[in-house]
Image (cartoon, rainbow, N blue to C red; front, side):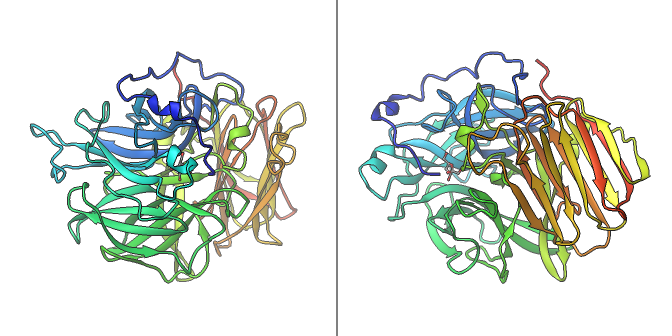
Length: 499
Ligand code: FRU
């Protein structure tokens, strides 16, 4: 995004006065997501520091606790024991004299390479960008650098390292969003960092001293905007290690505004290489940005994104809070015509909200009431044209589907509800089908203000937010004359908020 420079006064926000997580709210305001994490109140953007540690899923996030638009960034915090129900915790990191706390990651330093551990306690280390708004206002280019903090109480309280910044700015204006992971081959920490419209890799034995190893991206990928929030991780494909690099970009996304591309390749401990020619998006919809994966999850790769788009995020018509996260998604690899692609599917933990399948077979249409969040799953024998419509009595509707003639999935929110807050919001978007299989399957995770579409077992994913005046109460599926659903199920999902 383009950052607004705020008064120096904001620097006086201190680390010593933790703010409570906010008043009790019923999570029942208009447009309030019921199965997605959203903060009780105020502004949220990127997921940060996601780590699974001691049986707890931690989600930190870009947070401004004083307003519903972007401002001096803090790290908010939420925890979950099942990846589905979230409990908002007190703010974890506050701006300080080095600046706002921008996006970053958290690692568990089990071998105590950093020396922050005490009495056998594993330090959790947060690595983040410190963004100095004063330097920015003065027209300097070195106003973003990387700092660290550690926690010896499982992420509840954090101590900033006295030696910050640990990575100074080398003269690159956009120098941010460190994602750190241990690399067993070189036995060092590797930091994957967004540097203008490239990704740079740094290494460190202890998380305190960082050495530049390489950069990637000069001649590949989308370059219509600044690169942000990268993530690098290996996926094991039947004994072969394949490396995946996620990179968010803003603007320059396929539907306008922000989006996240990915590269398949190899990482030798120093350098990432890829022979991928075309641009690939982890989510071809409008509303999945800055997503990265959880740390410390072994062979699982669990991704979560910010369910909005910088093009209109600060203008969407919610009052008490702004923005929600996507549902957590399991990532895996698949091959199409000999090329690796990423698949994303809802994590299996989501079944805790409802999994009782009432499967109907051999249908040509489906018409049902919607009384809250739901999961739709359909399988087609033949990839024929069809549409799924969510609607309310006021005539507002959100439509998604597949057009067999053009081989495109589409989402149309031109009549989906409130739209005047931004001129590009009420659009119809498309994404080319990647799969070449004759059959097709589609899963839709529906909430009050969003739908996440996973087609062909997650080979094409499209996330879309919407703001109908009243929640949608009907779902209907129709197709061309050859359209037939081999199976169809609509599973109501229980809201995650119990207060
Ligand atoms: C991405 C981003 C990051 C930055 C953060 C600031 O949405 O612009 O690059 O760290 O948001 O809030």
